Amino acid sequence: MAKNEFDLIARYFEHQAVSRRDVVLPIGDDCALLAMPEGSQLAVSTDTLVAGTHFLAEADPVKVAHKALASNLSDLAAMGATPAWVSLALTMPKPDEAWLSGFCQGFFALAEYYNVQLVGGDTTKGPLSITMTVHGFVPQGEALTRSGANSGDWVYVTGNLGDSAAGLALVLGDKQVDDPELRECLLERHYLPQPRILAGQALRGIATAALDISDGLVADLGHILERSALAAVIDVDTLPLSAELQQFEPDTDRALQLALSSGEEYELCFTVPEQNRGAIDTALAYSGVKATCIGQLRAGQGITLMRGDTALDWRLHGYDHFSE
Image 1 (cartoon, one colour):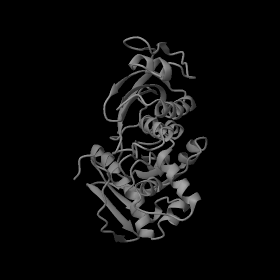
Image 2 (cartoon, helix red, strand yellow):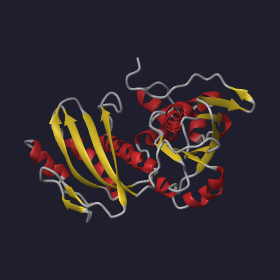
Image 3 (tube, one colour):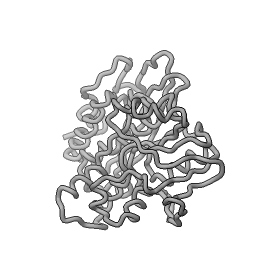
Image 4 (cartoon, one colour):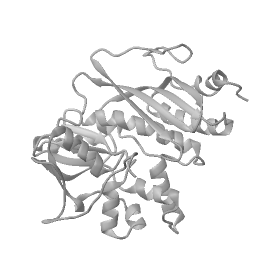
C-alpha cells in the first residue's frame, strides 16, 4: 500500500517503458533536464480534465487516462509537432490503488505508442482531476497555427464527426441503443480518441492553418476565423458521418448538427489553398486518416451553413466551460 506522495510516485510513475535519449535527468529531482534537438521549436500545451465535467468519477480509469493524454497529444498534432515529453499533476480524494493501477495502464500504453516519456509532475489530495503538460518538437518556422488562413482557402476535417457526442449521450443516459455492438463502438470513440499526430506532421507546408476539434467544429473553426479575420461557408451535406452515427441518429439533420457541435472529437480542422489541394491525399496516405473538404473561406465574419443554395438557420454552438 502506497503510504505517501513519494511512495505513490515511486510505485506507479517512475517505472515506465519509454526512456528517451533527450531526457538528461528524468523523474526524481526538482526539475527534469531535457535536450532540445537543433533546428526545432518547442511546442507546449496544458489541459485539465475534471471528474464530473470531463469524465464520470466511476468511469474506467484505463479509458480516463487514455482520453486525458490523447486530448493533450491532439494539441501537438494540430501544430504539426512530434510528441516527446509529458508531465502529470494528479489530484485524488485519497490514494486509490486500484484506480491508480488502471490509470497507469491506460496512460503508459498510449505514452509508449507515441514514444512520450513522463518527466515530472505532482500528486495532491482533493477533488479528482488530471492536468497534463505535453511537449513536442516542430521544425523551425513550420508549426501550423490558427492565424495563417487566407480568403479562398478550402476547409477540411480529418476522420468523421459526431461520434463522440453520440458516445457521451450514451454515457449520460440521454439516449439508449438496443445494439450492444453499436453502443460499445460509440463509447469507445468517446473514451478512446486517436490523436492525429501523423496527419498533423504531414500537413506541414500544405495547410495554412489548423487546430483540433475539442469544443465542436462550429466553435473551433470560429477560432481560425477570428485569428485569420475571415468568414467561412460550410456545405453541411459534405460533413463526414460514420455509419454508426447515422444508425444512432437516423434523422439526417440531427446527425449533421451533432457533427457540427460535437466536442472532444480530436479530429483536425485545417485550411488549404487551391494550389495545395492535390497534395493532400498523398501527404496523408501514410497517416491512415481520410480528409474531407467541407467548405471555403472568404472575406467577412462568421460561419454560414449551406445546403445547396439555401442558407440554414441552425443555431449551434460548441462547448463552453463557463456557459450557464
